[in-house]
Image 1 (cartoon, one colour):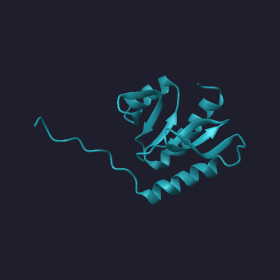
Image 2: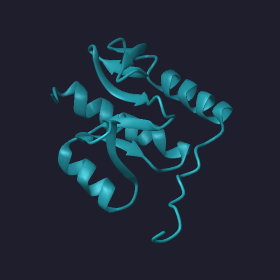
Image 3: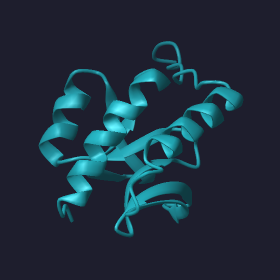
Image 4: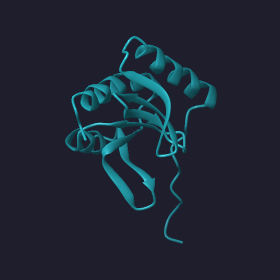
Length: 120
């Protein structure tokens, strides 16, 4: 063997994730252009004008859509990873967040604005 196996990041408890997702949905409740409950990459998603801006992946990761430059910046600073919905398929405009759940709303608002403005 060549070294110890890498540990996967510890995911928040399911109840905590559910509560944080509920808080996100409530935060966007007043925006008539935002919908929740649709699927994206096999995951429950928040959408603006029918386009996904945030979701909880099938692996329990919080994922947001941002500009490729912003995703690069957040990855380089250790705040997330490129989202990989299938092995070997990294998404340059999607960030799998490594930050505590308390930071989700700020990133979701940033992603909402990015997608609302017409990001592809």
